Image (cartoon, rainbow, N blue to C red; front, side):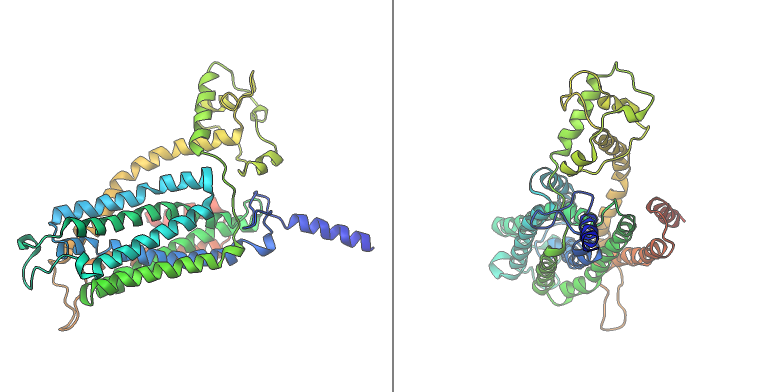
Length: 423
């Protein structure tokens, strides 16, 4: 009887390990009962609220600081804001590459967070220390008529701080959400369903932090001072990093799996070299890694699809087995997914150009409006962006309720959210 109980316990212990190849912070196979899921994600959601508050606390009102304090013109300041914002959004491509190919998501995130905090601290000093900020033009003098421009040193420190922040966000932005997804094992149905809810709550935390910036922080910056207005986001970022690091013992980690660009290049080269090879009628005859090999390579297996079948030739067994001649089905499917994303990427160009106006044109236009609410209160110009955030906050809980209460499969739940947004 005792032997049977011990045998069952051992079996249960093995089943307690995740099946997607994730490990704990010490590099051991992750245990379901002690890691991941909502316990780990709660720290990440807390981080995201304060980090988004810090980021949008800077970007929401940046164009006004450039015109009012650095005495730049409207066109110049708008260009500088969009150039910096574009850098913030393009650098995550490199941050994701470094994480996936070399350092791993956790280490990349921690290093980038330190860089991010250095940039925020330097920016706060740049708006606080008298020697680092331009002299005032005087009351009633518009920026276009100001004859006291910022010195090269003052601009260099301010923009240097901004681009240090951009480098930091390049490492944090692509890794924090993917780390959240890693906390749920796709091989466990309940956790796979919870992953969908996580992304709903993720968006909710982003909008909540953004709303705080678009209302409270921009009011502080306009009416109290830029020192406090930038100091609060800096403290918020420091708090967010502390919250994230507190949850370190509970996180599941995926090991670096090599460069995704190299994997895609291998598929394209292998398919091109075998373009005359005929595809088998049965997809099961294509080359694929075994379960053990897949876990060892830190990549989940992806089922074969019938789209872009030309690339399937990379997985046809014929002749040499070099990685540049024969690729597993999972690697081929990863390449297909990236190619399918290219049209989506191109479609976002125009909407992205429109969104950029929220932090430039909308804010400057807001300065020309009558924003008074009574004799002692005036709505900050940058608060006009809060209306967008409020509407997004209104719709996000609906998506959470649908996925939580109806328990729809992830694909169907996503379709319902898209239908709601379209309607």
